[in-house]
Length: 162
Image 1 (cartoon, one colour):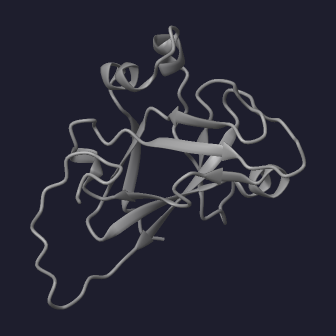
Image 2: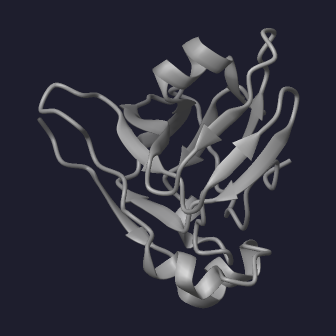
C-alpha cells in the first residue's frame, strides 16, 4: 500500500477562529487524528470534537481541527460513517466532501469542516458523543486530461476556485 498523506491538527488559532464555542481551547486539546479501525479499512474515521446532538432536520457545521497533507494527484473524499447513514440518514450537506491536495496551503491551513444533517424520516434524534467517529475519509488517486493546463492557486474552500 502506498503512503501518500498525513493528518495533522491545524493551529490552535485557526481552530478557535472556526469554532464558536467558549471551550474551544479545551476541545482543541482533545482532538483525535483520523485513523483506520482495521487493516482492511479504506476509510479514516473522523471523530466528533465535542458532543453533537441533532434533532430530525437539524444541521451542524463541525470544525474537525484536522488538515490533510497529501501528494499531488490524490484527493481525500469525506463521507458519513456507514452506520450513521443507515440508522439516521445522516447526510453530508455537500453529499461528498472533496479535499484537494493543495487545500492544506490555504490561509485557513486546510482546516476540514464537515457539515452534516440528520435527515431521518423516522423522527430519530442523532447523538454523537465526543470522540466517536461520525465521518470517514478515503484517499483516491485521480487523473487529468492530456491537454490540462491548470495553473491556478487555491486559497480557501467551499467554492473558492470559481
